Image (cartoon, rainbow, N blue to C red; front, side):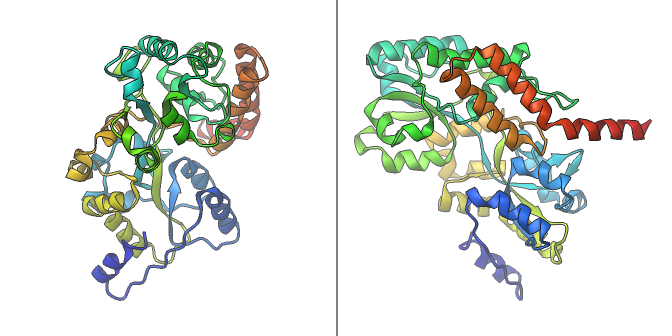
Length: 386
């Protein structure tokens, strides 16, 4: 970011942008504290799952009128699922800056040894391939690494199966048949010895284990393209690649998460006009390509993907396909807390031997409790509209 700002300042004489860096691990709480203390900056980069919470708090400025006056800042140049994460109750509150979703990273050589020249496209074929991998690799080797304390796999599989995750009347939908089907698929990976029953803290170096062939597949995000290229041995660089996620019935059902980072303007900003100009600058396709080259973060603007840097990147292409299928997680402020409960119940099944049906019933109960106030507000809103 610090390398992009000087060009903007040269285009806007007299304007000085002060950049403050905050670690992701501290950003959410720091922004909430700043809101309470009336100390927010003019604008920020924000994980798009935080936007509903910030809208509920009244912290974000609506951007609809600004976007209508800026033809280059409408939804047409963005991936639909990513754009949707910035729309709350019909209002626009953020502009996608860089995008994130999940795909499969896998060892092509191991899959070939198991008799597959490409990644399967349906759940049934995927399971068969994973069984073939474990037979080919032998004891103490696994087809896939799915840490039970990472929530995206459970959520992705649920979305692929057609689950809403949260019902329109703010209740958990995890015990329903669609999510239950997805959860059973996930649990079967541990039960059948296809995935090690571990958390991500129990694998000291996932890149080393991937290189050793301890596991052949991993569902992860775009930041790992650079990590795999830096951390895997030179002799393995042609032995791995990425693929869109298989779906229950094929590619069309192989959806993934609409994640990433958005740019927002805070309602209390005294420099909203220049903040908007900075957002327009950072959204330009040429600037997004430059940012990708600096960081490896994938561009939000689809025009940027025609640049040869990305068009010729073999591993990035799976992300481009998956971004076209990406769908938002439920647009509720409590989503971060919901994901914690999902991970808790997954561990209860994998480690504690709790039956999946009982775990999902408990998950719905926990989520219903989390969303109690939301149901109250929805009921009041419905009563007021009558």
